[in-house]
Amino acid sequence: MNKRSVKDLLYEQVARVGGVLSSPKRLEILELLAQGEKTVEALARELSVDIRLVSAHLRTLKAAQLVASRRQGKYVVYRLCGDDIAALWVQLRQVAEEHLLELRLALDQMTANPGSLYPLSREDLLEQARSGQVIVIDVRPREEYDAAHLPYARSLPVSELERRIAELPRNRRVIAYCRGPFCLLSEEAIRILHKKGRRAQKIADGVNEWRAAGLPLESVSAEAS
Amino acid sequence: MNKRSVKDLLYEQVARVGGVLSSPKRLEILELLAQGEKTVEALARELSVDIRLVSAHLRTLKAAQLVASRRQGKYVVYRLCGDDIAALWVQLRQVAEEHLLELRLALDQMTANPGSLYPLSREDLLEQARSGQVIVIDVRPREEYDAAHLPYARSLPVSELERRIAELPRNRRVIAYCRGPFCLLSEEAIRILHKKGRRAQKIADGVNEWRAAGLPLESVSAEAS
DNA sequence: CGTATATTCTACAGAATATTAGAATAAAAG
DNA sequence: CTTTTATTCTAATATTCTGTAGAATATACG
Image 1: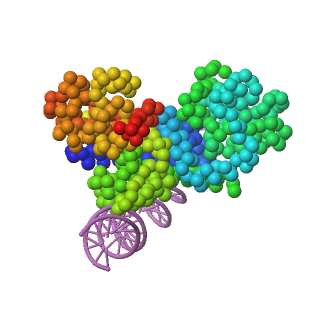
Image 2 (image 1 turned 90 degrees about the vertical axis):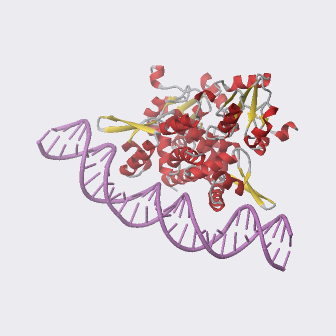
Image 3 (image 1 turned 45 degrees about the vertical axis):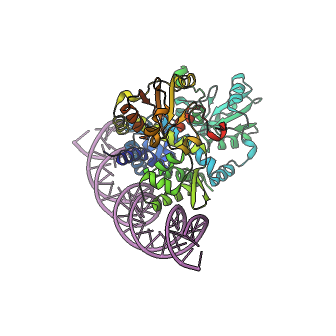
């Protein structure tokens, strides 16, 4: 076996993993699975695509050993094979944000109102949340909150926000977060909160950005609540 | 603009970057450029492929804003657009190593002799190099050493090793490193050193793994040598 | 057991991509 | 100014990939 063919083999294997990152739909699947395990049907619903297409993409992901599945009754539940895969997605996204001007522009105009981003550092936010100066709400679906959430955050899914808004104390600033910079849930949440006359801002981070930065997270099973 | 088309646009942009990671040749180009800037011709020589194919791959890399070029006389010199891109390559490779059994097996059998890997942690190696207990040699081409190298390492390209072997003190253990786990230069170096009766081992890390781990590097222009 | 639902499998058309080779540029060297 | 060398551009082909749709399978439910 000569040097060239050894190298070809090695790089080819890595390209197998790289290949799954080349499709927008697959990246969106990775982002969703990075929030917690999901059924094929749930993924298809979020992506607004045919369930059979999602199944095909999941097969590609499985071939590259990035996801695994288990059957739960009628459903098949998929999950990422490790935190390193979520971290890879975060880093890929950050590289794209850093180098692709088009992406940065699209992101900027996604946040309709520029003042809606809470400008504090992660550490400061953590401190303010701990001391109760601000209320941090996780507006993702409950299951995702259960899988992992920011410290001191309470679950208040955007779908229930309008109904449960009274749970939020009027005298405190509310900080919302969702799945990450590409997710529109927190955007929707502050729209609702502002409509109701609340002081509310969002942060772009989700649990994966938080974890990639080496900061701690909590999960419901771990805190017995 | 509805939510779906906004998301499609965002993920599509990231997929542009992901797409460049799907080709083995392009990954190898990234690895080489991560060692320092290179001409098209030098890349083609290392990859053993037609220069026109390398040029085509560089064009796709440029379209994704991952590399930039400048002309230097007869040659065009390419470079990575930032350290984050080298870090992305390292992380992608690590994910592949972690999850693809085939890759791990191929890597294991690449290192012919299992005892040839120096088992110390990065920190311990750094300490031993500082104190002079071991001699760390960088066996890559001189230009790559100049661009960045491990602290306390001296340049001794594998092409000059046989001729310059007397420069290495006989009473000290020699530790060789090269471009990273996929590079065969250090393997070749310890083969030569063993043939000459020297105690020599290698480490799998290269400067990019070192940098990704947050450890410091040196470069020749910075240390005025 | 039959039906409904979730998922996978298979086949295929259209799009995108990798590779090759010939022609065109651009700078350097004679 | 011609030749040489490095690189890019263009066109053509082979291959792979994405998305679509019909058929098959697997489990739950009645």
